[in-house]
Image: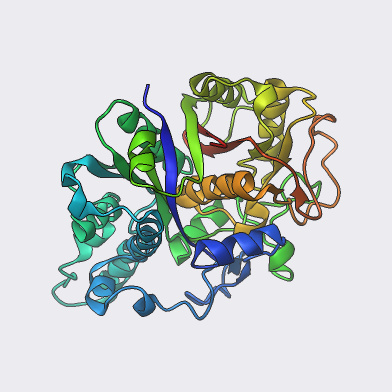
Amino acid sequence: MKRVVITGMGVVSSLGTDVSTFWNNIAHGQSGAKPINHFDAGKFKTQFAAQLPYDFDATQYLDRSEIKRNDLYTQYALIAAKQAIEDSGFDINTMSPYDVGVIFGSAQGGFDTFEQQIKEYAAKDHEPHFNPFFIPKTLVNMAAGLISIKYGLMGINFTTVSACASANTAIMDALNYIRWGKAKIIITGGADAPITEGSIGGYNALKALSTRNNDPQAASRPFDVERDGFVMGEGAGVLVLEEYEHAKQRGATIYAELAGASMTSDAYHITATHPEGKGAIKAMELALQDAGLTHSDVHYLNAHATSTPVGDISEAKAIYAAFGDDANLSVSATKSMTGHLLGAAGAIESIISVKAITDGIIPATINTHTLDPQLPAGLKIVTGQSQEKNVDVAMSNTFGFGGHNAVVVFKKV
């Protein structure tokens, strides 16, 4: 079976619009949460999010025609993809364009465009007029399509949609298509731009978001006894996956190997995870089996833990059931810093997992001061500050509404 490695990475997030800045803030325990300025949030129960830096200007990265034609989520995807492709350094002109594909994830696609256009339509009392880009801007597959168009990548191209597991699903599919010899390189990851009135209002209605408006940076507190919901995030994460021998031949920088992945379903509830984490346990076991590893090989696990009362406990039980009191394993929840980027979450958390391997740093779970007594006592959750530790293998969990569980495993090359 062909081996698959990571040769490029790109990030757009509240903690930075490049990998170096993003990782430095993660390693130093910074929060990206801030009051929302995308719209007037004063009438909402939640008035903050892990929004991109206030001074973010898409014109620094894209030309005005690209901005006009594309929803925010596609803009984020294009910017992160540019970083990752430049980081990887592959030259499409020296390859068959059919050997390079794009498999990308998103939970909501062009939600912002859809919302704005419908509001404009509702406000008009004459013949309705829709933007000619309305439909292509809202399509969930458009980020994958635009990345391939911009760079002339004519190989496999599609989009995965599995709620908050979308990016990990895309990464797993990319892994397998390269293993099967269907591509040499695949651009993968995820993007979402869900800081909109509809998203914030909808998740408030679900009682899923933190309402700690007086202290946004301390609002996301996974595993803490006082957690009250997640913090919405936005952005994109992109990885360049490449067949190992191809990467070696061209002298590419190899960050880590994508050793295995798996998916399962909870078959339990539309929004809640299984209380005992049955699907999650199996997904972790199958991912390790796919990677040819055992639980004792894993040094770091980036938990999905979003800071919700029910979800954190079910995942903690699942991790403990899969790993037990394994002294090698350190667990952290980096959504405490990034917020929850929905369909992009798995991509940026995969990048965090790869950086943990390359830099030997376990990021902390910030804002977690008193662990919930319902947590398994033997689970080693890193809180306070990041820890230096040799990391040979890292696992990243993502779970999505509808019961989707997607797990990826990276290892040192």
